[in-house]
Length: 228
Image (cartoon, rainbow, N blue to C red; front, side, top):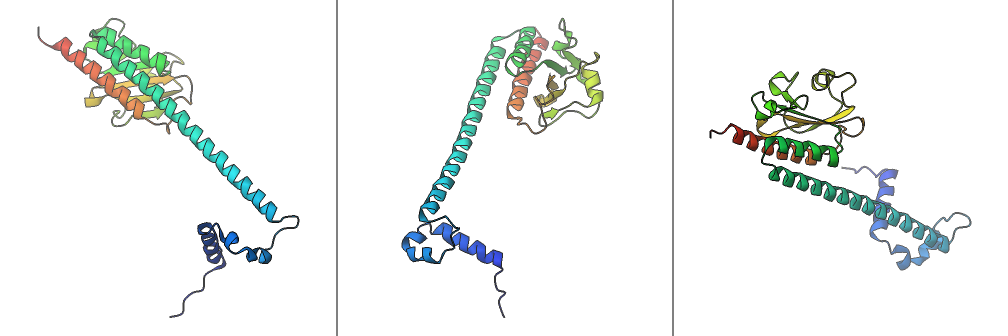
């Protein structure tokens, strides 16, 4: 059965692949230089200069990638330090009011949250604290589909924004909805910056914040309700 001859593109790809796998080809077969079509004004020195230029550009790209990786590593380390600091603050606060205050303070100071809401069951002890409004809202009154699974970032649904922030012009431009573990409720942090919490941002740190907040509120809530 006759074989189909390779196309021009396939031949070109094969030649390029061979040249890449044999970078010393011209060194081993210098006579090939006599058969190459080199643009006017270009010679062997120009080819070497071009190679140096390509290598220099590649090196600059690699340096840029390394700088970007280091920048992300430093940012992640700083975030982990802030999460660690929050965990210590929550552990040191045995009182429910102090624990919620520590949570809100850390979110505002370290995580650039300009607005915070806790949506918890109506019977949760936090709902009975002084100044619970407007920080704490009843989970039973949550409008729309329940917030479950992974944290969600971006602009809020208008109905949900109106329920969470009933004051005129009080809703954030962007927000992160963080479901608390065990279906305990929802932690919401918002910002006036529309780009602060966007749909494509990573949610690993937000998920850890939710785990910390949920564990802190669940433990203190259970202690508050325990018979004496």
